[in-house]
Image (cartoon, rainbow, N blue to C red; front, side, top):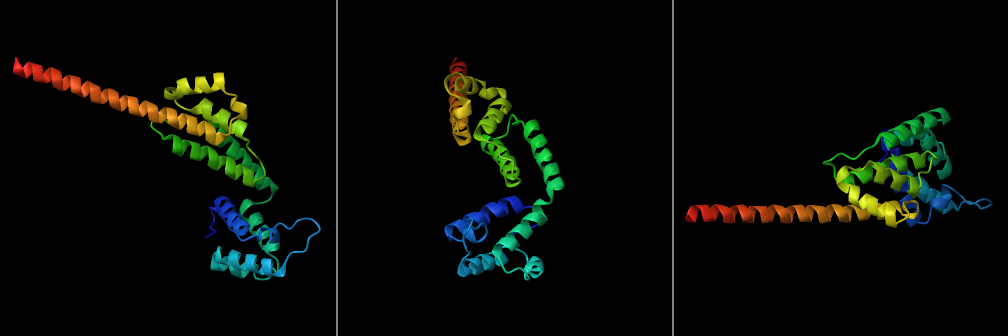
Length: 200
């Protein structure tokens, strides 16, 4: 359901639903094509179900799903000046983003993806090269080894963002496993030493 703060993710989900039903062309018709009436009516019906009742009353005068979609977009994304301000905010958030020492890689990569998605919805595309560069330069020191390996043996500019996340995650899991094994080994040594002292 659309609300005052979730337009970006709402639009992504609705577009996906429309694509599954093969009706997205009612919202963005191809040049020179006529919108099918049944597709248009289906799209409007689905939009009505995905917005609050008070908003439905405000758009009942529109007869095309494109008009409804554009109205919702303008209302939530705003005019150009607001759009520029939002983009500047996203850019600033993106540049200042750093992964916390105790933060999980999933949560941090999710933050990067969320900013990229919001910027994309405003017409500013952040390509994989930019996202990968940001990820590799803003993770904590514990990832320094894998970052160095990636930069030395792989072209980060040609690597998909999710591939970079996967490599860092695999490294993180291996590191956690080694730390866990070392802790177990240290505990066993301590127990053995303690046992020897008691025997003496």
